[in-house]
Length: 545
Image (cartoon, rainbow, N blue to C red; front, side, top):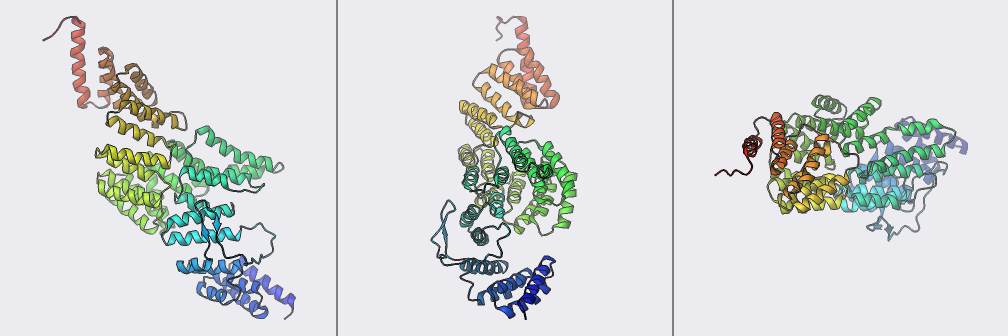
């Protein structure tokens, strides 16, 4: 057969692959490889077998070739076959004995004589070494060696910043702390044309910066595109409305406690792309916080129908039951989600929260500890462990875990608030004031209703220190954020009472009792305030015995 006829057959194989006609591709690739014995044609046959899910046959073909250990392409595809066969130890063995250090730098390789038969070099390719590092990471993660998996994922993204999957695994599986994510991103060597990608990645990592800093990151992506494509504004416009980018914004709104804003954005996004799973997760979280049980029910039904094998679907069912306070059922579905995907962090945290809601502390701790072990870059499990210890009045232990959470994520306001609450319970009121002030300083956006409990806590601490003017100022500030808080009115009334301003105290006791008429503290203190005002009104110099 002439060379031009063989080249036509190669074209047929490539066309069959592009049209997903894998049996046809296998048939013709087999004939081409038999006619030429060219390594490139053997590789094409193995690729067709792999795409047709004939993993064992593809591996045998590659392994039988004498070039498998000398050509990285052959070795990588053979390892991919072993990945699909779940033979993880053999997969690692096929990939070689390279080592990686803590910073993701690969060394001690014995591959100095290997070659890489590039297909044609016309398209921009992801570095084969990066793909191999990523596959090593997946193998180690499957073998539950998450520490090694983390190092190899870092090596993959450092070898080639275009290897997005490695960064996705590091972020989604919470393998890095806030500082480690920022450090990794700053160490990546982007090409001159990849400025937009650097900005985009900075939006994907944990976002606990101030609002203006985060908003500047989003604007920078749009600016990068406008600068690089002067003639085609349509491209920059499409990226500005990109679903991934807007999902990042929604996630940021959720972190800031702006749940309604987050919910509205995710609702629009899911109308545009109803199967965007990252956006779906943020939408579920916002619906949970807002108590939208009907929305959770509809989402759960659709997800279970469309993705019965995904952890997210059963997590949605658990969220629905949690929202309607049926904690036993929610626990069952959170557990099912963790069984389907043991690396799905929200399900583990939901599982612990469902136990905590029923004050089953030991079981809740078990869920949180598992999550803390699996997701070292996520501070929430450690934070919730501290909350459980605080609930049982083990304040010293609670403080230790809150400090650990602060180490993992030093910019989450909730961590500082809990440290303040612990200090308050331990009667360290000056320390409590310091923590509460740091909490308010770390809130990324302007103060909202979500910040009200911290402002009230700060007022309580000032009152304990007998700094009544500061306390009253904080209580009044809290009332501008929310005027439906019993604790604020009661605290304000009691502070005025301590200042002997009985008429103001009586006014605020009444307002507190309007919110909760059977509140024992306010009822008793109102009676005392009325008596005190009566005495004050008669003559403050008269002594009653």
